[in-house]
Image (cartoon, rainbow, N blue to C red; front, side):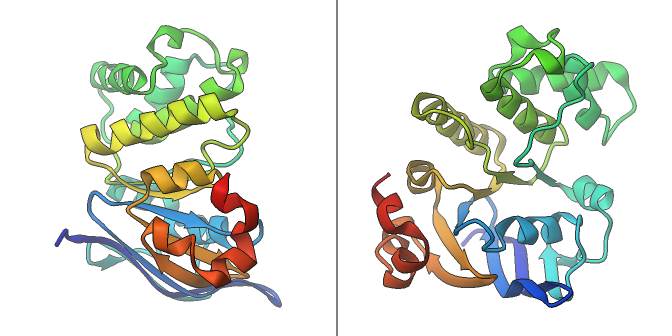
Length: 243
């Protein structure tokens, strides 16, 4: 059995009287691809923010490689090997694609030559090498999504959390991203936690899936089992199961 990489143990996050995440628990083993699905407002991104250190949990623990990290700031968590993308892509609009990715690569070294080499390697992996001298503001949405992925990969993560990386893409573009994510997982040995509404992506990519509803984790299992769960169908899937 693969080594446990991350455990979220009874995490609750409250904003005043609003319980955004309610006693949520999940785990990832090394080299897994795990999906996290649920309706808008289910608590998925809030849970991502807690894992990444952007938010402190009201209660509960986040354990990464055997150590609690829920009290650490985001840059410390990222340095340990946890990276994430964001739903809304915000590149450094006046920097080139290469310079954007180099920012992430500076996390572990100040040697510009090494940083540039790593950034170029990552850009080749995500299919943006020919756009390396294009400034961020001149990219289209599919290219921006790839840039967001490249910036996270440049931090050389062990765990990469993707927050709706296919949002806004058409089916052809989404299929290309699915292929890209599969390649990253196999070539770089990165464990992936993926929030996604594109069910084809979840079904294709995920070894296991967690489902959230109103802050609660309501189901967990293999994708083909989860989509047959009556509670999941009622709370979220409906016609999505066949989308």
